[in-house]
Every structure is written in structure tokens, then in C-alpha cells.
Image (cartoon, rainbow, N blue to C red):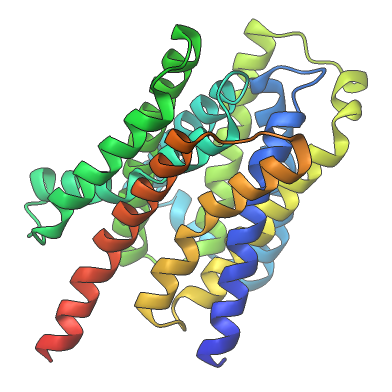
Length: 296
């Protein structure tokens, strides 16, 4: 596969993920956030499972017979559940742009966690990136109601959970390269935990769920199933620098989609806030890569 084709596949994945934020918002017209999540991840599991069985048929046995790999798989699913659940809950109140861009804070958070837990070396640029992200987040949430500010705070926690999710993926994949099986187990964990909360706090019915069929299928099959598969196929073939930019476009696509499809507009403060976070996320990914390339 050429780098151009790999970049195109990642751009498609980023576009799907970005527009999925709108579906996550509009898909809660007749159902609650946990009902939406368990419905979404039921179809995500169904979408990825056949791929896992076709390409990695024996890996389920290997994972389930290895307690360390199994614990890692379940823990990864739990953090994905927390991240997605908090994000879905926040979308009841927060604007799509806030959720999309604040979620991308997982990028510098991964670096910070790696520094203090795994003792990894950090490039100094991460501290500038953090300042940009904090400033951007302040602009997105300032001059908002207390309810919206509390909702945005949940997204910060969500970003932290996504960061831990990504770190666990890295730990797992270095020990056992089985992306599709690993993904199917994660999605199933999210489905089960979301179902438990939906049955506890909401009243899901097949009739109400059927009203949101398009949003559920779009976020389940396309966003989780197809988007995840495209990323796996393309990312190891693409150059790191273009990949970093393309994957960071998720927040931009989400904001544009929210403006076009559900008429969510941004004032000047929010626009500057989005730009600040986007720049922070970009430089924390690109500067270290460029330095390594230059040092060679």
C-alpha cells in the first residue's frame, strides 16, 4: 500500500469519527446515553467480530488462556467504556465542538502519564502544548452556564480515560499483535457495562432504540467498526507526521459537521479555543517526530 493511499484511508477514518459526534448527539432523542452506548457497541462488536474470526481465529483462545492478556483486554475495555460513557453523557449538554476538541486532550495527557508512570522522556514542547490546550479549553468553557461547565469537566475526565486506554493498547500490542480480536473484546466489555447501566438508570425498549437506528448503526458499524479497521490497516504504512495531522482533524470535522447538520455555531472565543487546542495537539505530535528525523 502506498503512503498516499494510507493517508487517504486515515482521512476517511478521521472524517467518520468527526461526523460521528453529531450522530452521538442526535441519537439521544428518545433514548438515554447508556442505552445509546450499549446499542452502538453491540453493533461495533458484531462488525469487528467476523474480521477477528477470519484473520485471527486462534487468538481468542490464546488471550483467554493467558491471564495477563485477558486482564489487559478487560482493563482496556473498561477505560474505553468510561471514556465513551462520559463523552456520550456530556453530549446531552455540551456542544459538539467542545466535546470533540477537549477529547483530543488525550494526546498530551498520554505524554504526561508516560512520563510519570513509565518514566519516559518528554520533549520540552509538551509543556507549551499543555498551555495551549488549557488556554483553548478555558475559551471553550468560559462564559457558559454552570451546567455546561460541569458537562465539559466530564469530557476532561473522559480524555484522561482515553489516554489510559491508548497506553494499555500500546502495552498489549507490544506483547501480542492481535488488533481485531483485541478490539472485539473491548467492544464487548463496553456493550456489557453500558447495558448494565442502561437497565439500572434508564428504560430501554426496542421501539425507542429503533427510532435512533441510523445514528446507532453509523456510530457502531462505521465509526467503531470501519474507522477502527481503517486505522489499523493504514497507520503502520503512513508517515508519522502526516498521520499525526490527519488523525487530529477529527475535531475539525466534528465542528464543521455540527455547524452544517445541527446548526451549532461558534463565537470568536470558541473559534480561538479550538485553534489553540488543535495547535497544541499538533505540535506535541509533530515536533518530536521532526527532531528525530533531523537528528538522523
